[in-house]
Amino acid sequence: MKGFAMLGLNKVGWIEKPTPAITAMDALVKPLAVSPCTSDVHTVWEGAIGDRHDLILGHEAVAEVVEVGSLVKDFKPGDKVIIPAITPYWETVESQMGYHQHSGGMLLGWQFSNVRDGVFGEYFQVIQADGNLALLPDNVTVEEGVMLSDMVPTGFHGADNAEVAYGETVAVIGIGPVGLMAVAGANLRGAARIFAVGSRELCQKVSKLYGATDLINYKKGDVVGQIKEATHGKPVDKVIIAGGTMEAFEWALKLVRPAGIISNINYLGSGEYFKVNRVDWGLGMGHIKIVGGLMPGGRKNMEYLSNLLKYKKLDVSHLLTHRFKGFGHIEEGLLLMKDKPKELIKPVVTI
Ligand code: NAD
Ligand code: ZN
Image (cartoon, rainbow, N blue to C red; front, side, top):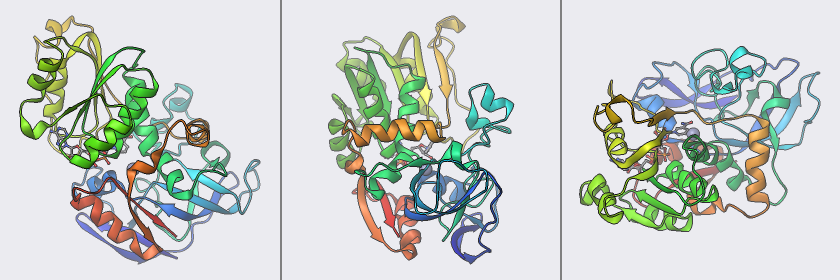
């Protein structure tokens, strides 16, 4: 079969590989829609997870089941399924501790295009199909469904880890597709005031559709100063970091209240350290939490998040700015994600 792969650092291309073999609990699926991700860009062009050779890229897909192993109970060939970006082994100690994202070791619940071939192949293997697949609701398109693989769960994870509550004020730094879903997640959790920090006009406009109340352009002045001016000097309750550099942590510490939470979902692909200012962190006694998380995957999360689309509580179509038809366009989609033209939020390739 054919696949679009990372050939080595800074190098991508089409390769031929054998169709993967499945075990008794797995499914073999073929993609119906895929979406290239900023994380694919970090992987190839920033070496964020180290060097990889001939590794098929991609971790966001809606697919059709082609074959299932003998122990798979709930899925059959022909089913249309949502593929979460995180597909862990569910029996490990880490999974039992509630962190399936790290099943088997740090970040190893992230299988696709990390430790096994990703979804940009003509076929791919999903381990533990009953635990990792979810049926795509009938009234959700494959293009919308693919936003459930990573964009929705990651943005919502940012809001969940920030423990956003009714009436709170939240700042979201970075409003690409992930940050936009963090805005939507904070909004659904009841935030009253949401600062969306970004510079691109389209993303700003879309952030309003998802519940942002205040737009802050980081290219037009100091972010902390602009937000503090709008709040008359008061701190915000929570900060979600979904873009930018490690400097964002310094801003967040200056913005957040005592016992507030800074929730990072940004992939820190370069640099070594971020600074924690002693005074901003309450001299070490401010009860300010800094948490960073990989999105939760697995079947239950996909089923519950897809309900939001099914029952029209969340409209992901605003994210879909570039649509391609045909497997061959995956490369184009990925290069768009790398170049980030200002009219881009998310490309989707239907197959
Ligand atoms: P994106 O590049 O489209 O969006 C990030 C945005 O931040 C861009 O619009 C960029 O212009 C903006 N930005 C740059 N500097 C900024 C600054 N100083 N202040 C504010 N905004 C700034 O990326 P995305 O697809 O939305 O993904 C966001 C991050 O989330 C990426 O690093 C991605 O790899 C990561 N990610 C994490 C997970 C997870 O599980 N935690 C999953 C998927 C993606
Ligand atoms: Zn992704």
